[in-house]
Image 1: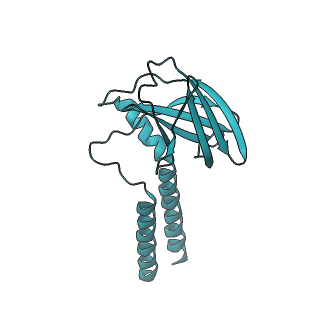
Image 2: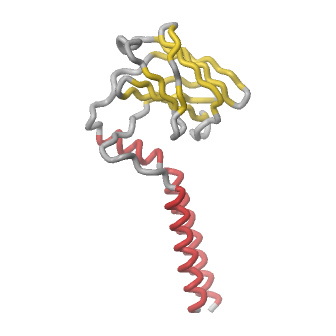
Length: 172
């Protein structure tokens, strides 16, 4: 029985280490995570956008599963003028707006190349960015949405550990 408990303790420690290693790095102190709003969608992809500090931040996800899509190229034009788009380490894309955005009524043409498919999506430029303090409810919803997979992994590990403990008690 003691050997089983030691084994379970080691398994639990390994599971905690694995979930901690899989967790995304926290943002730098003082940084506010962008709040994404739906911008455009097709049958295959959904594009969400956030505007912060004169930069348009785009997130491309698969429509049915809401997981990041493997985007090979992204081109953005605002009112017929191309914007330089650069990939970011977190899987999003950024396009500096500069003086191109005079107001929230600009028309965006997004050309998304993914999985050998090239799609043209048309959308309106999202409104002004949220205030620096942000909306607490929107921030909490964004936090839960981005950590949902991690929560499922922790729940699954907990269920398996409870099952192992129950079986080991019956065996002894």
